[in-house]
Image (cartoon, one colour):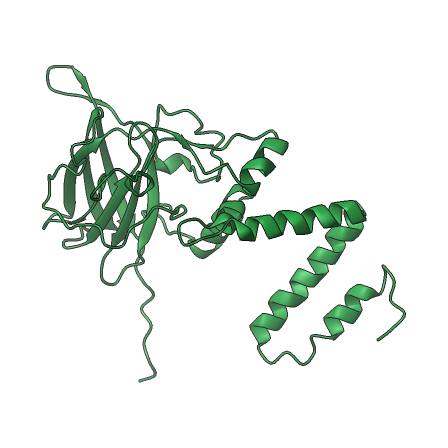
Length: 285
């Protein structure tokens, strides 16, 4: 293994992987090496550009902490997170489409009774939410757990606000016998992803904005079904066509307003969620 040039070095690196015991690891790294080398040859990467890339990745890692994951932000803004999500969630007809989890999920959200107000007294325009959870074939699913969370009308989540003494705008519910759930809260706003680090500077250099359209997060689980992670987006929000993390899908856009019996427009969201059944894997009989 010597005397390498731009034409033969790729195969030399691939050959060096021959003794890799993990077959999947070998497949992944082989493909990575081939694509990475082809990329470098395609753009004829200069030393200055290579050094800038190393510096960018170093600063991205240095920005990470137990409260912030800049590499996930990088993955999100390059569309990789949504691509991985799409490959791993090919949904049957009747099942709700998925999107990214986002960084603000809290596993210990309080379980509240149906119809509860989850705003915790935070000021904002009131929003009522009504949903039904079904199997992809339309059968209602009783007892499904429904985690919900969203930003306030300034675009901030509770965990971003040091002055809040408790969780707000998030909760867990269980569907009733008809698969239904309901709660009230406040209208969420569109907001920027964190853009004070290397990913934000990358977006600025690329002429891109950091904003996400207004949405409510849902994580829905039921025994025998694939857990659904998704958002429902406000149909009137800005940035639906330019979400910084490429998370918007047409099926996940819904009106956040409706008319009551008197014709007065009120803020409300009604949505049907369909869950994908898990494969029925049986052992040999």
